[in-house]
Length: 396
Ligand SMILES: C[S@@+](CC[C@H](N)C(=O)[O-])C[C@H]1O[C@@H](n2cnc3c(N)ncnc32)[C@H](O)[C@@H]1O
Image (cartoon, rainbow, N blue to C red):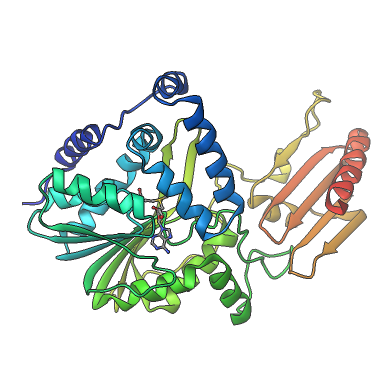
């Protein structure tokens, strides 16, 4: 019988405790514990590896995960991810419940893999990762847990083919890390739409390593195999080419993607959504390439009233819906505008203008940033200064 969500949650807490992970509700408590556990050398080494991973190549990334796998480091470091495991593990359990042979691509220490292998002893699990130290820890822990339905392989799924055949492949934060990559710009600052240029898509898949990882993953998927992926793909400029890469490999959505949100010690993380996909799916779920809805910022021109508060604009919107609001400004008269383009397709537009009784400033770029500020006529000077500041920023 499939475990209930309460049973999954209880089993997960027990599992994470077994791994030595702790849940913290305040940053203060976490960092106090971290200070007791880590030596100054540990902290220095981790910080320098993290920085090299941020700016470096695959060797730097592997080196970071090798260091992170050290037994004195991983319980503390991965306790930061406690909420993340709580968010992801139940979805992964549901997907595994419907499969027999499961691949966890980029499994790291196998914290999630071993959790699911414990929940479903009758199913068979393989975890692959390119960090040798992570795989060594993963295998040792699986042995300690007596898991005979789970094995690990050290494979770089970007440069080596995978082996086996799976009816479910899971990849969480492993296919599309490349966090510095801005993604694919929109066709112009006026729209959120991306064109359909295969050269740009291919370049994106190549420089992020996503294309080769996905090709290798799909190669070991059975003809109606399922995939669960959850990556750093929240920004539209990254989400669109990520989704296109999935679709181009014959993966179709089984259900609408679910937004993922969790706390790490220092921040609330809103990740790319969790996708449940299948080859030859019977469902007809449409890929969504529009910005995330932001119903909290509706625009009603009649709601803009003269305010006695000279400090604050009458209306300010930094979300995608600022574009619709700007389009709705009746009788718009542009006083100054600049559009700058870069050879790589980046483009930014800044515009200052007026409409009856008011002044506005609008800024839009091809990476989906939008900004509309409306002030009373008498506050026009604020927008002039702001306009000049933005021009200086985009010139530098
Ligand atoms: C952020 S960790 C995620 C670990 C685990 N999936 C989770 O969700 O907790 C990313 C892992 O993906 C692995 N990885 C990244 N690219 C990989 C590749 N091309 N082949 C195999 N593993 C890879 C890294 O070594 C690292 O252990």
